[in-house]
Length: 507
Ligand code: UN1
Image (tube, rainbow, N blue to C red; front, side):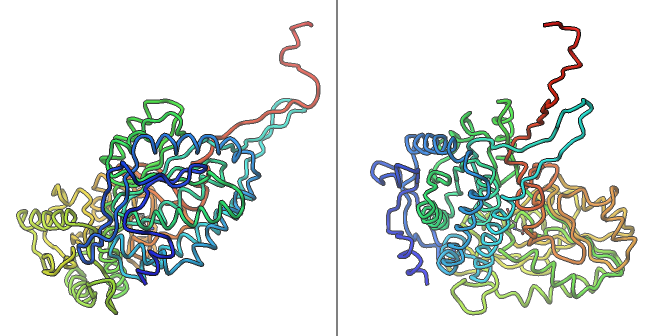
C-alpha cells in the first residue's frame, strides 16, 4: 500500500519541496534536505529539499501573475477546478490516505475519513461557487440600485498544521480558490508526503482544465523562509492553523500592515459537560473517541470532562472501560484504532503534562505512560482530582489525555467549560431541555462550536469551523465562511440621470 502510494505520486528518496506554476517543481540541488519520518516506526521514509528564499520568490511571483487572470474566470468555472480536484482525491483516495498514515501514524480508517472530508469540501465549494450571493439593499435615493458584491482578495497563503495534513488545507484553499484567489500552501514540515500527493492531484486538475497557477506549494524545513510569506505584502490573506503562540505572532505581523488580513484557527482546549440526566454510555463512547481518536492531536479533541457529582463515579468507570477497549498500535496492524503521536517531542510533552498533573495532586486512573516499543506510542490517559486552573490544564497539549472535573450546578459547569483561554469546541451530554438550552444560551458555552449529545470532534464541514478567544476567531469550511476569503463591495448605481443631492451646483 505504501510503496504503491509513493510510486503513484512519483515520490523518490529526495524530493522537491516547491511547486510553482510555469516553473514546475524546483530542483533539489543546493537546498537543505529535511526528513519525512514515519512516526509508527521512528524511521526516515524520504527526504524533502527544503524550499529556500529563491523558491519562495518564484512561488509568490507565479501566484500573483496567475491571480490577475484567475480573478476574471467565472466563479462556476473556478468551482469546476475545485470539483475536479475532489474527484481526483476520490480516485486516489487509498494512495492519499496511505501518505497520511506515513506522515502522521494515524490509523488507516481515520486517514481515509480525512480524504473523504477533502472530497466533501470540494463538492461543497464547487456548489458554493454558484452561490456567492450579495444582498440587494433598498436605496434611499430615487432611481438608484444598491447591493453588495464579493470580489477576490488576491493571493492567499495557507499555513497548515501536521494533524490534518490534507483537510485543513482543503477547507481553506477550496473556498479561497472559488473566490478568485490563488493559493500558496505552506504545510507543516512534519507531514510533507501528503502535501506532495495533494499538490500532484491539483496539478493533474489544473493541467486538464488548463487553469494553471491556482494552487502552489512551498515546503521549507525552517521558519525563516515561512516568515517571508507572513511578512509579504503581496499576500492579501494569511490563513493559519496551529498554536495560539504562533497565531499571535502572525496576527501582530499581518495586522500591522493594514489592508492585509489573517484568519486564525489556533489552539483548542475543549470541555464536555455530563449532567445527571445524561445517557452515560453514549457520553463515555463519544468522549473516549473525542479524546483518544487521532491520538488526541485534534484542536477539537475532548480534553476536559466536566461531570455532575452524582454521576461522577459511574462516568469514570465507563470511561475507563471505554479507554481499555481502544487498541493503540501500529497503523499497519489489523484492528488498530489509535496510532502513535507525531514525533518524539510530542511524547515529551505528553509525559510533562502527566507529571504536572501528578505534582498538582491529580490521580492517574488510566494510562499515563509511554509504550515501550519503537515509534512514539503513549497510553490513553485519564486523570482526576485536579484543580481546573492548573497551568497545564489551561493550555493545549496534543496528546490523548483527559482531565475529569466535577460540579454541583450547571452554572458552575459552564464556568469551568469557559474557564480556559481557548474557545474552539464544547459539548453537553444531557436529556434535560432546560440544561441543554442554558448551555446553548448567551450565558452558556463561549466556544465557536457547541455539541449536544456528541463528542467535541468531527466537525461537519457544512458548518463554519473555528473558535473564539485564543482560538483566534477565524472560520473555515461551510456556512458563509467563503466570505472570509473575499472583499465586500457596496455598490450603488444611479440609473435615473438625476442628481438631487448636489442640485445647488449649477453646471
Ligand atoms: C484541527 O484539528 O486542527 O472537526 C482541525 C474535527 C477536525 C479538526 C480539524 N476536522 O475534529
